[in-house]
Length: 128
Length: 322
Image (cartoon, rainbow over all chains, first blue to last red; front, side):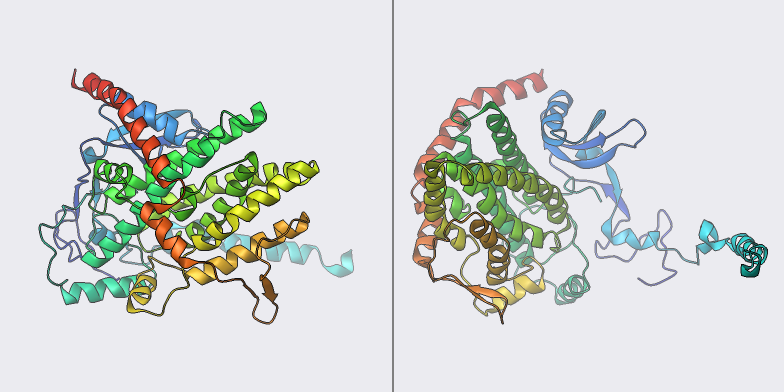
């Protein structure tokens, strides 16, 4: 994807969708998105949908459909048409415009090299 | 992007004459580069049609595929087997629900697809049109039928329609459990009394042809096949998948000293493939048009339950209205 083409919110990216960078999902009214939390320490993760007339039924069906064997401590359901999402055509806005290596720990390893050479110096073979 | 909670594109009023050539070229390039298409994105009408046909048929097969094994839940030999079989059947119905939702993102409502299926106008895999006569049939279905399906579905995990490939990941994970469970039933019978071994051998004999049929006729070199492969709605050819299946599953039969029902089966070392007796492909076509030995009976059963459970659907939606 072309570097530097980064639509700001409100901008219209040139995209396959042709128009918008965000929109509400237009799923049928009876479709609910299911979010599952496997353990308390984990976030809720989108796992799929169920068809249901109301939230209570959606939770019942989500339990049957998505928690048959793997761990779950909590379920969320939300009407899929209430979810707003960035469009596929706007994916390029996630492409970094510049080198982002300064945001990663791996870019700052000089001190480790210092330690390693210090260790080598102080553990010369003839001393062993 | 969330798997299947994506826009349902409206059914086109009339078939559009031609896809915009510029968009079509961009689409083709994306897929060739290994990219996947998500629900709600632009796609050629013909791609939508083929993807929908594939996924709709897969969904139908999960629902109808639950029925032969379901017949054995009340007659399972032990409580442990009964619980495992119930879990397996429940998984299959769950797969059907996941898949109908994915198909829905391609432009048909779930109700429409389910109605078409139970009225006998839909298609489902050939293997689910056959009877499950004995408990040994359960072993054959779980090991060989699910094993065959696993080859196809495993390959399709890298297909170009992202929502389908996402649910296939989960489906294959559960199918693997079905095969392990089946191998346990298979082993118990294969290590059992002469009568149990004979029962297993007989079930294998009855299922062999439908299983060879399962992968379809060897693909003709045709513009259609080439397009399906180029669009990655097909990842491996029918024959490639059949050979992959034979390489993995023929040894299981031989290890237990059972006979492969095809006396013409030979391993060609130099080509790393099996030759097998050409099955009657007319039978596959007939069965595929819902003309198999159990097609009518299972569809009638499905219709009966649809009527019998109408009150449940009604009660649920009344609660919502209140």
